[in-house]
Image (cartoon, rainbow, N blue to C red; front, side, top):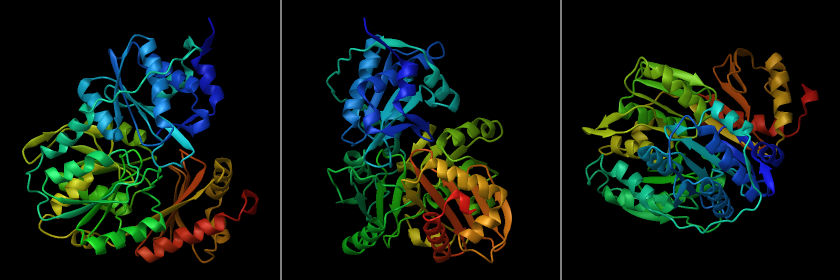
Length: 479
């Protein structure tokens, strides 16, 4: 019988783990590669967890159904039952699987370009760790090279559970009188968000639905989407716009003016509204978070949900309510909490709905813009250069770490002095002026990201634009 080996197939595929699962080109995720990942995942959990089922769901990428079929083929070939939930948000899949105490696999490339996709893996107790990633990559499992792809028949239980998770927390009149636009595009949750917001009393208007996949990046909102937000808000008299990235774990929300909020600011407002005691946030988040008196402790981590989640164990030793969020807006609830006298179970994976609802709850008798005006005057901006070789990014950052002011001069900031350098993740330079410039290669795609922080939106935007424009045309040898 013709056999293949998981370790060899995965190693030869070109697919790699990034900050959010295994990612690669669609052409690299062949049926054999997806089956190999399925077997390796099961093997990595063997002996540590007991389960008879594995749940699986997908986003709206055209390549996702075939990848799901291959994963299901692997699951069923070892005598386990695959529970297929169709197109739903990643947090909906993770929540349902955790309720059932079973592992799950999400087929999604999140926000990365159309020609790529990915696999996210969850243990019965939540996201896999970096150690789990190595166990998957190093697993040695032989499997049959003949692959029969099954038919996909979707179960709607996970979608129902996810909606009920939030609807039961609030009075049915929470959003009464509110006009909410849902920028649906190709989001995995677009078919359930309307019902969720309507169940809480809102009038909902669907916006921008498309059958073509749209790679929304909540950290680098496209100029066309910025214009759409303002136009939609004005034309429809909206109080709020809700959207997400492709797999529904990162929120993109706009205030009454159609201005999209930064994800870390949304996370800050959500954590304050929840009364969270201790936070874990990536180092790329706005410095006002660490300086906030609302929290007893704020731990800063590398960028990526696995690092935020890893910090929860430490924080939970000392604090009763623990959470985290990322600059992309994904909110991770690290402990059970009480809202309106009702228990909300921990969901230690990125979620888009909770921060949106908590913001709306806080703005029930005011306006979102008023909540934003009450915050300290620190503003962040970010963008990316796509198709920028990771090796080039690493070389530039490596040289600049040794001589940061040399990089600043090359970027055109001749009069700027560096007062501090943080290499927790990439190169984060604090300037004598108080401004911050942070460079980091993406962990999911060949992209170089720039984060900037200043005391005005105009200045933070200008820092990002100038930095990325200059980096387009320099080589590591220029430093």
